[in-house]
Structures are given as structure tokens and as C-alpha cells.
Length: 328
Image: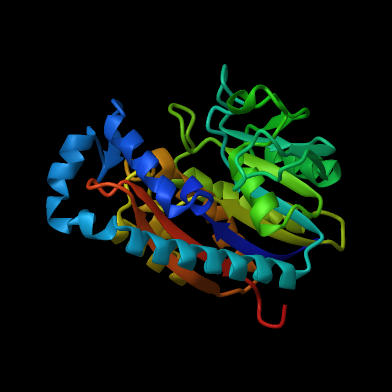
């Protein structure tokens, strides 16, 4: 039977791949955004978030000195995450991510698995997500089809993504959504093993799986991987999180505590209104945590770095976590 030997939860926000000098542009975009943003279980306009958070004095955290230091911490954390992945010596990776209307525009499946043989990355993707040349990576149809059939038998209505759709963000190229491209490019250094992308719609209503359904799915996914008739070493990796587009350190600390203690019930008891917008990517962590519990691996927190870019505290909580059993 296959063995799950490694778990990882890694953020993929663009602030990781742009210089601090460019963060001012993201801040200007936040201020001019006419859409409301999720903060503390509410959809609020930017000026209202500024008013509610005035006492937190984010101006002091939006200086070039602070930005440069925190950016450097994130880069150091990514290097440690990349090394932990290398040390795990995996044969296959199951990567959990979401599509942000990059490939699913006219429909929105709740759960999908890519079963094709080829995965594409490269330009015109941004450098943090893609190499500067066109690359074709291996999928793993055998494992993907095993997962699809096993999960379907466990009463999950799965979509089989047989062929990679065009990426509407990137001139209809066949480049993977950014959640997957980041892992393959930044963590796997453009040398990924055969991968199975699992797509969970944690972002768009009304087909978002509730957190308790994500827990059920995580248990079924881990069991399905282990039931695969293979001697392969498998990694389960979640791409995304923590809180964004409004960074909330208090909420992030709660998430981290629950992850570190393996408290699935605690995660389930968090209001669904917290798991919205970018923060919804936290749901992707659940299958990784379940796989880690089943392989008896503790969580290693490499770092937690809150990145702010405006007086409203917009930005992202960057958390870097992995799970590996003692002795590999």
C-alpha cells in the first residue's frame, strides 16, 4: 500500500514574489477597490475596515524597513520549506488548491481531481508562480483515477478533470492555476514528481464545501491514498492561507494553535463566515492535518509573518508549516 510520508501547508500570495517596493501598488489597488472585503465575519468597504482597525496603527507596519525585514523572513522560511520537502524524498505529490476563476469560469465544481498525464507551467505566469520558460510536468493518472473512484464510492460527487482547461488569467494558455504553479515552481524548484492536483472550491458560493465536509473529505482522501496498491511515498500539500485579503493576526494565531494541537473540532467550530475570500484557503489545510495525524507526525512551524500593506491591515498572514514523521 502507498505511504503518506510528508505534509505541507504553504502560502502562495503574490507579496512573496514581489519586492517590498512594489507592495505600495497592491495597497493602492486595495484602497481603490470598490468591492467590499471580508473582515470579522462581515463584508465591509475599505474605509469601514480602516475605521474599525484604527487603534492597531498599521502605518507603523507599512514602512520600507519593516517590509524589507518581513520579506526576508518569508524568503528564509520558503527555503526551509523547500529543504524539508527535498528531505522527504517523495515519489508522488497530491496538491490541494483552488481555482480562482482561472480555469473554471462558466461553472464551479465543488470537488475535482485532474487525471491527465501532463501539467503545464511557464509564461505568461508571474515569476513567483512560474518559470521563465514553458515546462511540462507529469501528472499521475493511475493515482488520480484511483482517488476519483474511491472517493465517489464514499459518496463524494467528484469531477474528473480529464484535460487541463485554458487559463483565462493568462491569455488562455494552459498554465496551471497559481496555487499549483507556486508549489511546483517555488517549493519543488521546477522538478516536481508526478502530481495529482485536487481542486476544492473553497472560494465561490454556493458550491463551497463547509468546513465539516472538508474534514470528511480529508479523512476519505487520506484513506484513499493509503489504499492505493503501490509502494510509492506520497506527499500531501496544501497551497494557500492564512487570513487575507484582510490580515488578522488574532485569527491566524487561533488557526495555528488548532493546527499545532490537531484540533479538527476546533477548526470545525469556527464560523463559516470566517472561511471566506482568501482565508477560505484554510480549508485546504484540513486534509493535510488529517494525513499528518494518521502518519503520527507533529507540526513544524517554520515561521509566521504577518504582511500588511495599508492602513486597513490588508495583506496576508504568511504561515509556513510542515509535518514529517521522526526519522523520515
